[in-house]
View 1 (cartoon, helix red, strand yellow):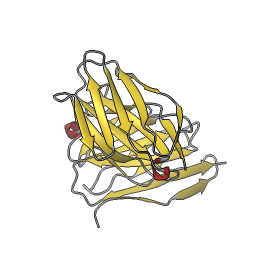
View 2 (tube, rainbow over the protein chains, first blue to last red):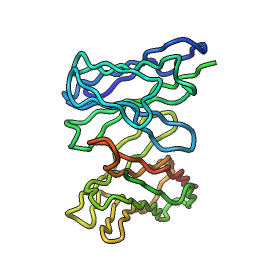
View 3 (spheres, each protein chain N blue to C red):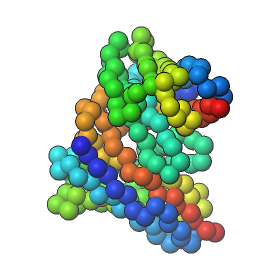
Length: 113
Length: 113
């Protein structure tokens, strides 16, 4: 069963703690993306990766970090420097960056109090 | 960078009616226009897309039309059903990051039985 998995579905953290969100894909896609979604807004790009061991900042990268050690995995760390971390986080992948067709995972809802 | 405007923000129709959602974009170089459907608490699902070399694409009850001169594209859903109720997002490439999609703000479609 091919697709993108994100875990956990819900995540709760105390302010000041770093937290890592998982994203795994078995579609053999080269490119992977992290988006943030807030109520009433569209999706905003945090980071993207075109290939293993390479990643680029998106529009709202401040307070976030990523790694791409394996083709299948693209974890996102929300650091304590992120001022408003509570949001719905979506991971996506595509064959290549310039293929544009992006497929999304189910998302992780992060709540920081 | 790319700017995508989506209208209306909410749309309410009776079952069986048609629904139309429109997006405008700013980057005349954009050549790929997807539409996503997002159900509550889930990740967006790619439902249809169009490239700039065609003016219309249809898949059963959904269709997308593109007017490159006016820089707008629209999603048309015919014979709407209650299960079509969701948030719909349009997107276009461009912006500051290669391979990036810029998303519209979303349209909440409600189909009343």
